[in-house]
Structures are given as structure tokens and as C-alpha cells.
Image (cartoon, rainbow, N blue to C red; front, side, top):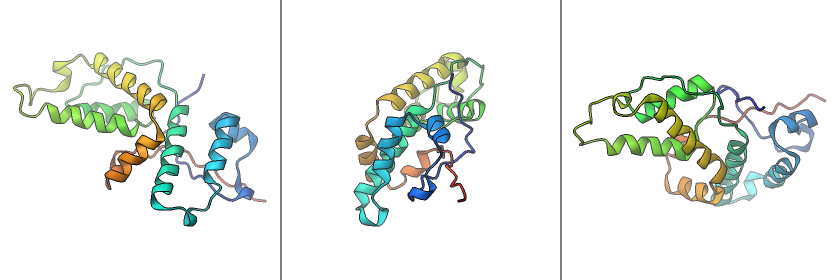
Amino acid sequence: MKRPRPLDDKVDFIQSAKSLPSDVEVENLFSASKYLSLINTIKTPLKELSYEERLLRKAEMYQLYMKEIPIPSKRGSLVPCYSWTELGKSLKIIYRQPLHFLTNILLKQWDQVKIGTRDEDQPLDEIIHPIKAEATIWLIEEVHRLNTSHHHLARLWKADPLHQTYIDSIIPKIYAKSP
């Protein structure tokens, strides 16, 4: 069973052949075919790519990694929350893993649609049971992790210059070994 990675682990995909990770590290991060796909993605130096190509490559790496993060199987903690985004932040802390870019956007939108209703000031955990709310987030998260096209992500990121605010730092560092 895969274990979720801590939020504070970051990834730095290194481009030099000397600094590629060991076989054990590769096996832990990606299956061989996904790893080879990733290596092919990062072969071209960034300087030679256009902004759109760099964004597409970044989205592909992001989506490949997000697919590898397992959805927590043991869940259902009662997390009191005032809003969807607050619940999302709490889940990131409890389960020590990021939420997908699209999930973060959706949670923000769900909070915005509540504005102007008679329940606007009522906490989310009084409107919907916290366990149902958490299950909803993980269901949506699974859909986003497994079914999102990196091309779609790149288009969204290109249209929104502040897209980084909705991307959790997620990628564990692959440290270069000294020769």
C-alpha cells in the first residue's frame, strides 16, 4: 500500500544525466514507463522551449505526479469547518498531502456560490455533515488526479497568471548523489 507523501517534501526534477535518481528512488516515485515518459519530457533544455511548451511540460509533470499520490483509504475524521476551502486546508494538514489544482479551484467556487444566500454566515459543518463533506472532497480529488489532461491544465494556467496560488507544493525532491 502506498503511503501519502508529506507536504513539506518538495521535488526538484533535475535535468542532467549525472544527477538522475537511483533505481530504488525511481521505483518509489513512478513506474518505469511513467519515469521514462518524464525523462523524455525533460530532455529538452528549458531555454529552448517557448512559454507555452514550458507550461505544458510543467503541467505534464504535475499531473504525472498527482496520479501517483494515493487517496487516503482511512478517513472520516470529524473536521469542524466554516468553509470548503478551510476544510480543504485541514485535510491537507491531517493527511499530509496536497489537493489537486482543480480541487482547490472548485472549493473556492463552492464558497463563492454560498455568498448571498440566507445560509451565508452559517458554518459548512452545520449545513452538511463533516464526514460527507470530506468524502465529497476526496471523491472530487480522485477524479481530478486520475482524469485531468495536462493539456487542459496548461490552458488554464496560461489563462490565469495567478494559477500558482492554487497549486500546493507537492513534488518531493530528487537529490543528486555525489559522484
